[in-house]
Structures are given as structure tokens and as C-alpha cells.
Image (cartoon, rainbow, N blue to C red; front, side, top):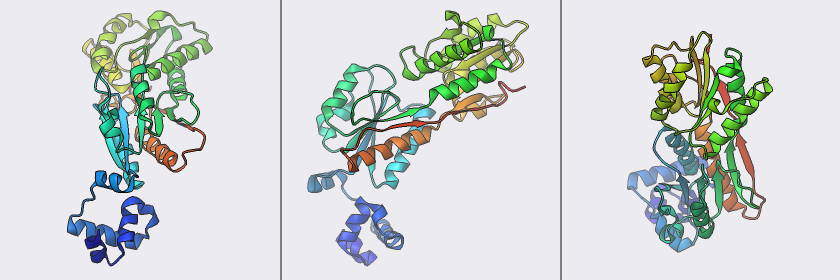
Length: 328
């Protein structure tokens, strides 16, 4: 730090301030310090900083998985926001059925706080999280506890908009929801709103109109096997719980010679890159995935600065993006 300070023409206190709270350093000074760091190849030892100051600049984010575009986009937003706020982001996934590695005692001690995405009931994970004692932000799970910060996606408005859009072109008796796992919080809410929106349109949906599986292309193809048999003079309408399921349905339908959108109108969820790569392009409900990660980090950093404030709930909006799979 002394070498960096000498090269930048500033005090070591200014270098320390830049490393820990970049926003508190004037722009031209920050640029000089950053240039000196780059020229000298200086790399602060994050773990040594924790031991010396007893104040960590490391925050963790724990996800159900880190595979796939949804999670990579969420992490992109979280990492960019952590960097902007002067924090290092430690990333991990639940690791299957065993305990989450990130929550082991030798890792928890280096983290200032944790953002965790909980998509299904998981008592073992929740117990680990509470035992860690870390300041916490929960993504996706509407747990109501005093002092707990939550970041959610507004599944209801996006689902309702998608179903109402399909109902302008499809009879309600020909509408289907193809979801992920039944116990998944997002799938459960989207299925609930699907049924409610059909009821508002005067249709009591049958059990056959709501189907559960996995968030995969393979499940979409499997679900389509029975759906294509229902194709008749009137088109079918399908709301898929994510874009991968929708893509699988499209593949199977097109293999069977079903015209999209002439005989099958379909809407996905998330608006990943996959939606613009399909032919025709996939109508989908846009989820602000990068913003979801960024907001979780913002809420966590604010919690670290204001530990006694009440818990907050931030709900991010969704909206329907109409493309070729459901347009006239």
C-alpha cells in the first residue's frame, strides 16, 4: 500500500479508503490510485484484511445451481453491483443433497453477509443459514421474519399478462400450463395465477391443463408428446414456466409437423437469449434477472450498514414480450 501511495502521490490512508470504500474517494484521485495499482500489480489479500480489520469486504451468494443462462445472468448482475460497491463476491451452489460448502465454519468467518436463493422448501439449508449468524438477504422465497430482507420477482403480473394474451387467440379449454417441479415456488405461483386467470375468463381448469416436471428442454419435449395429440381445428395455447421448457415443446411440435403459431401458440418465461434464437422467435415473460442479482447485493450491503433497520421486501416487475410464437 505504501508503494501504491507513493506512485499515486497520495497517502496510504487514501489507498486504504479507495480499496474499502471507492465511492468516498474523488474521481481523479481514484483514477491515480487505480493506475498505480495496475502498474505495480498490487493485489490486496482479502483474507488478511479480514484478520487485520475484523471487517470483511467479502459477501457470498448461494444459488440452487450455477448452470444455465438464468443463473449466469443473475450472477452477472450481482458481481457487477458488488464490484461497484467495493465488495468481493464469493459464489457457490447448494451442492446437491449435502450441506452447502459455503456455510462451513472456515468459510463463514470470512464473509460479511450472504444472499441466498431458495426456490423450494429446504429445512436443512434454512437451518444452516440461520446457524451461520450472517446478515442475510433471501431471493425468491417469501419468508416473513423480522429483520429479513427479501427480493422477489412479480410472477403474478407477468403470468396474468401472458395468459390474457393467449386467451385473445385461444379458447380457454385449449389452454395449458407446463411448469417445473410442483414444489418450486415460482412454478407454484405461476400455476396458481394461470388457474385464477382462466377462472376470471369463466373457465374452471381441469387437472390436465396444469402439468409439472422440470425446468429442462427434455421435459418440454416430453410434455409436448401428449399436447400435440390434442391439436385440432382450434389452436392450443401453452404457457411454459421457462424458456427451456418452451423450446422443448416447440422442438417436439415442429418435429410432428405442427405449425407455430397457427396450430400452437406458446409463451415462455424469463426472456433468456434462447427466446430470440428460436424460429419463430419465442414470446416470453421478461424477468429482470441481472437486476435480481444486483438488488440482492444492494439490499445486503445496506443491511451491513444499517443492521437495526426493519426488513425490506423488494419486488421486481415482469412483463410480456410478444414475438412470433404467439403473434398473429
